[in-house]
Each structure stands twice: as structure tokens, then as C-alpha cells.
Amino acid sequence: MKIAYLMNTYPLPSTTFIRREIEAIEARGHGIRRFAVRAWPQTLVDPRDTSERRLTHYILSGNLRGLLLAPVREIAVNPRGLLRALKPWFTLSRKARDGFVRPVAYLLEAIYFRQRAAAEQIDHVHVHFATNAATVAMLARLMGGPRYSFTVHGPDEFVRPERLGFDEKIAHAQFAVAISQYCRARLSSLGRPEDDRKIKVARCGLALEDFAAVRARSPDTATLVCVGRLCSAKGQVLIPAAVAGLRDRFPDLKVVLVGDGENREEIAAACRLHGVADRVVFHGWASNAQVRDLIASSRALLLPSFAEGLPIVIMEAFALARPVISTRVAGIPELLDDTCGWLIQPGDAADLARAIEEVLLATPAQLEAKGAVGRARVMRLHDRRTLARTLCQLFGATAANPVEARGHAS
Image (tube, rainbow, N blue to C red; front, side, top):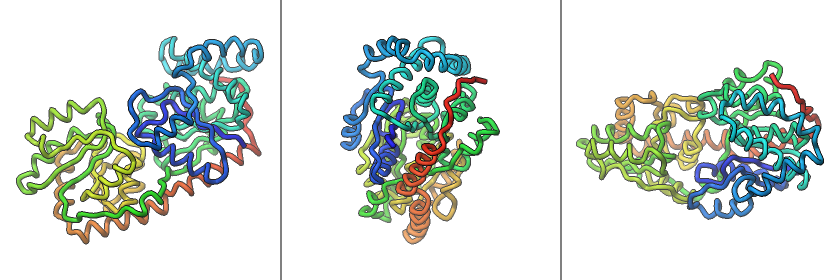
């Protein structure tokens, strides 16, 4: 089989898990062709992401001429396929309520991708996230392009699920992957009953070998690390108040924010308001190796999110034998409990402060015990080799029993 991966924006700092997944499948002997709709416009900080960008073929970025010529070729060589895709395209466009330009862009991207996949003899394409890249893969399939599947993560995909056309995308897909049981339940409620068998659970995986040489250190540190995009969903804006309430009792308390994003100034303003600008440190984006080092040197990982799927960074902290403070949302309780960390209510500043206090009062032995439970759990559930084996089995099964590309729409 010739397999392709199709993403919206790739690579970027938050898609390390996709790169790890691709590498693990390639380690099983499958070559993977990378496609993305667009390139990330900012500077990549991890050298492996820089290398990955060179391997990625971009459908939209720097390819305006190719996109405009694609429909002319399609009308000439595949008019029936193009017609077959138009009704589902219109249905998805109506559901998405994205105006006129975006749906037309998705159609052009799908036409171009079908032609490129045919030229490269791609048999199957896998997509991460059920957004525009999944739309492109579905439309390309309806035109006669490669079979497709997609992985759903949340939480953004579930904010307005009716606009993403989950029922259509699952119906035409070979299978859909949910990263947790919570995610599977949501997908099951959004698809057609007859397609429920297509929804598989395959948990995201780590390159555990990257964590083998890194061990937790500085057990007496009072530094916590929060890793993630600085945005409202991650809840970092609650951290300054919690730190302010604890600083007198714990004068060495510090929280390092690793990442950047649209909420940076709001968080900085909260730091100034509570007088903790010297206690909450803005680190910015970091390479994978730097993130591992920062977590390993911390007392615990802190992730007070309002909305999540199942954060990779929790898996990374556990792989480094560090306990975690996070919230009871989505799939997080499937991995995190009181044996390996602290679960708090999202948006509850008092609960957040209580958990941080308990982390600071815990002995090195107690922290080590929680970290050991987390490490054992992530090694059992989130090894990328297990994920790659599962995906390869699914790819192989779909090659033997392909879903017909139907042109109906609900």
C-alpha cells in the first residue's frame, strides 16, 4: 500500500504527535507521503519539524497556479467523478455556513489532491482532525481518489459538530479513529447508526525511547511547568491568582509557561494584577528536547484546561515520571487520577490553588510514587509502536474490504 497523511497545517509545534505517528508507521516498513493544505507561517523551533517541512507537499501554500489549473484538467479527464462530488460538497458547504470562498477553496484543493494522489499512486490517505482536510479527503474520494480515514481529537471539533458534517465524513470513510473512549462516544452520537462499527479507538502514542534517558530531577524544586498554546481553552489565565494566594507560604513557587498564543497579553495582565510577574515565567515555544528537560526538572506538570481532547503533554510528563495537575474534562480522566496526580474542576480557581498546595507539600517519595504510576500507565497505553500496529492493521483491512465511494448526501 502507498499511504499518505493529509493535514491542515503541518508541521507546527503542536503536531509532534503526528510526526511520531508517521515515524512509527514508517518503522514498520511503510513509506508515508506527507501532504498539508498550508505551511505554518512562523519559525519552527524543533529541527525535526524543520526536516519534516521539507518532506511535506503543500496544496495551497505557494501553489495558486496548480489549484486554478486542477479543475480544468478534472473536467477534461474525470467529469463524472467531479459531478459525483458536487452534491456532497454542497451539503457540507450548507452545514458549515462558511460563505462562498472557503467551500470553493476546499473543492479546488480536493481536485488538486485527487490528481496528485493519482499521479503518485496513493492507495489510502489518513487525516488528522475532522475539519477542512477531512473535507478535502472525502471529496477527493468521491471523485475517485484514494480511500481515506481520519482521527478525531477534540475539543474544537465538538464545539459546533453540526458544521463539520461528521455523518457524511464517517459514511464515506473506511474508518474513523477516536483518541479516547470519551471521543468515541461523541463520534458515535454524531454518525449514522449503521456506521458505528467504523469508529475505532486508537490512543495517541509517544516515542518512549526519547524519554528513556531523561529522569526526573531536583525533587525539592518548587517550579511547576505548564505546556501548551496560550489560549482560553487551556485555562492559564487562572494561574496568576492561584500563585498569588500561595506565594507567602511558598516563597520559591514558580510556574513556567511553555508556549505562546493569543492569550499571552491577558495572562500577563493577570500576572501584573496579582503581583506575580516574577513568579509566572513566559518561556515561549520550545523544542521537544527542551520541553522534556523542563518537565523533568519540574515538581509537576500543570494544565488547568477548560477544554481538551487527551493532551499529549500529560503523557509526556508521565513518561518522565512527573505527576500532573489537570481537569476533569473529556478524555483526561481516562489517563489521570489521584494515584498519579490531581484532578480538579475546570474553572475552579480555589480547587487549582488547593492542588498546587498539595503538590508543594508532597514529599519527594510521594511525588515519585505518583510519577511511577503515571509512567507505567503511559507505557502500557500510549506507546506509538502500539498505535502504529493498530493503524497498519486498519489500513490493511480497508484494502481488503474497501468502502465504495458513494455520491449520496443526507
